[in-house]
Image (tube, rainbow, N blue to C red):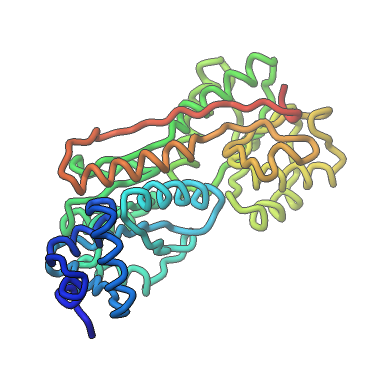
Length: 333
């Protein structure tokens, strides 16, 4: 199997020139670069990434750990990967859980990666669970380059990126109060997501500040998943209400459909505010959904830049907090 020295010999350049070319073709002159590439093609040379990582301590490989599949993750990870790719890094996505179900093989893989020289950094999207808390702390003990997204780690050495769902929840309460709503139905998401508990806590605190208390009968413990939430809504007897706060757009759609089957129309009989502003369907449902937008595009790019700064041993902020913006449509106006 040809090696880097063979490429250098055939191209008539030094091994250092070949190394620079492989790292970034623009690091060498155009003429020399053409000779090196011709030699690579002639010899069918392939970079031995494992050997290169052992030699340099740099694999240019970042692992992203997420608990499940949802539109929020699709968008933010796409932007993380795009920004990393622009800097010469690639990433792999590993599912640690599917909501509340642990995936043992994935967690075993995390442990193997931590004890190898394969991963330069980790981006972790943990759930608010004891097992994920332990996993986050374990990664940090074994590896310096760790960024947490959508949660607050207990280890103050770990930087984190968070969306201000608490503040958005308070704003939703003030929006309803300004319209005179007092009979408000609160649909909660899955409690093992920090975003869900922050939204609920902010909403209840905001209502109290407006002098509004809601009875337990007005709180439906639902889910971020329509297939779970819809049967619950169908089988529930709703108290009299004029407004609804949904935990995300998927659950909002499930509620609107269930309520319609019970003879209730939105926004004629009640108004609704949701979260996530999923642009694939929130603007196109009937009615279109008023929803809080999370700046996932910007956050994904910034998450990648934070992890690159950690790799380069630069100082980074402990906390990055992104505010949410309410996008008003037909369901609340």
